[in-house]
Length: 505
Image 1 (cartoon, one colour):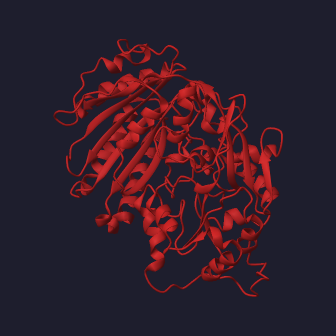
Image 2 (image 1 turned 30 degrees about the horizontal axis):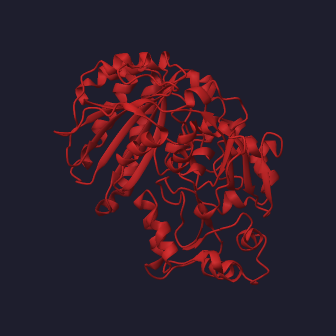
Image 3 (image 1 turned 90 degrees about the vertical axis):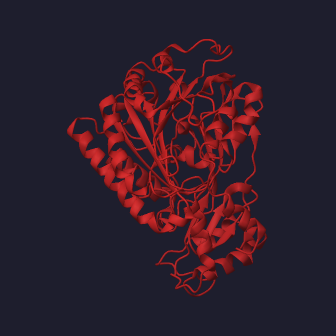
């Protein structure tokens, strides 16, 4: 694999596409023959040598070491493992933050990766109403810049996550109950089209492309800059409380009530965790109440969380605190949660949404508990399942200028994010783990269907490669995205040659 760093806004775009924009019907005239991946790299070296890196280069090693999941590191290291039979097509991957864990999401064996981490960061507008950033910027770095100004953006909740993937996937934030999905707070995308042209997509220019990019993954263009609307936000009340697993039913019941009574400052999720060393479950509740200037005082509790905060707390380990409640800022909360998953593992994500029901929360927990027992003997095994509210207060803010479909019509929901990780010594179990997770989710969805609790919405930011979050939004959404693709990428380069992300077909 070779690594391409476009270090200026327009550096090499035309030359890059001359190499990459190859269809079976259009053999490359430069070389007079179909390009193998080796020749793809040679052609890039000729035109863009100063920003092209190979496995022997320090910049290549820096990039691969910063992938969040070891599955992606594996993929980029395969190149050095012997002879290859090279397909004739030049394929490539696009990397912003590198946080999506499944293979080929942000890397590609034996091919080219366009790493956006060197794209410049334009910064705050003169009136502080927006900020323009590289898609490879990390959310905590962005918050660190905005916190002293009592400003924020609708963005990620975990440090180290890149801006691009979460925005294109329409993720949610601590302030989403007030401001909606992250993608709906984008004012402008600067993109490189399949033609090599650089355009701005916003509510006035290329409006249909703007709508498609808001939730359309990497199917339409390469995003090189994102302008995000800023919002007033000072320090606020939040943190975690820790509990024994036998308190879960009380927590589930309180969560069901909370989802129905969410207010615009609320953010909450509950997480159940088990690993191969402890082999027993524990729970952590995460709270943020984003009313600020002034915040809710630490001596008081936000009213929506009272039933949850009344529960007895227990430290996870002897000598550790039973809660981390405090007045903090966006940076501190995102870095707190990143510290919980600091060990690199071979991560598997999956997601599902249900109608608001404490009964379904318990049913899903029981299904997971039974499914993962065979893996508890692996010392590096780690599993978390998080339930996070998707109340109508949040989803009804969807204004239609996005590719989310009818998420606003599905009523009060909760979303499940499963994250299962093992070390490299268990790499041989990758397929077995995927099969167990798929079967688990099929059973859960069948049970939810039976009780009228199945919901279509799958957050792209938590989905695994076998899930189809775009198709779950309905035929109309898929058709609209395909029409935009035909207009801006008539040869289907982003569908055919970019393997990562979630495709339209």
